[in-house]
Amino acid sequence: MGVTVTKSFGKLAGKIKESTLEPTMRKLSKFLVSSAVKKINGDIPPANSGLTQAVKQGNKTLRDNGQLMASIAPQNGTNWAAANTNLKYAKINQEGGTIQGKTKGLWLPAGARTRTLSRQYNAQSAGELISAMRNAGYSFYRIRNVFMAKKKKGEPFPLFVIKKSVTIPSRPFLYISDEDERYITSEIKKAIHNALEAK
Image 1 (cartoon, rainbow, N blue to C red):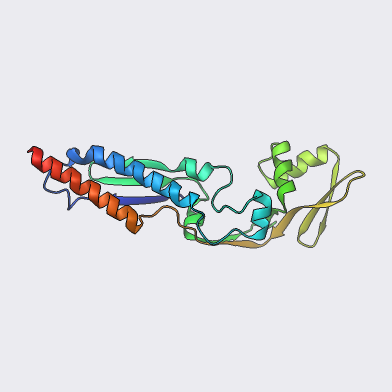
Image 2: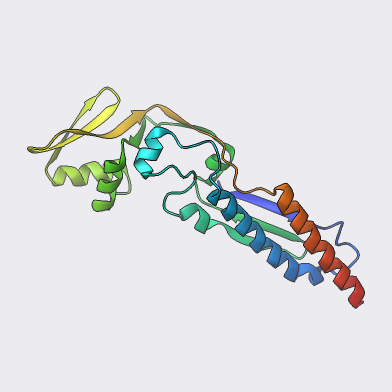
């Protein structure tokens, strides 16, 4: 479900004892993590949809609560460096694709108010939020694919938009760019040169 980027140096490192490069691999794994975070902070196109911007109250892509960036972790071996994330939604953000709704469809927050209410009632799903709001005196009704909420003496408002499917565009964040490649190659050559000179 997650995403991994790996750089292996088996052939390049073949002339020296593999364990010699392990400190460099640790350094490069951390570099791959920082590179992914930098890419995310650079706002990877395309822009969020209008609905997503309203819900998030901002237009920054791949950023909401910081979970994705915090989940990217370094990994390494004796002659390879990697960074990965095991978040369930990481792969769909990296590669793009269509998410199909189940029997009742996909219930998407209709706006920032839904997000605020979810936090207020500590609700992790549409069902939990509706249940908590019902207990708080809200009533509900549906107009086609929009699930509305209303509190006594209050104005009705859209709570969820129900869709059969949602297409997520590809926003790759875990990959090795040309700039990354130059830095990585430089560090490896430096480490191999130092190792051979020490022999």
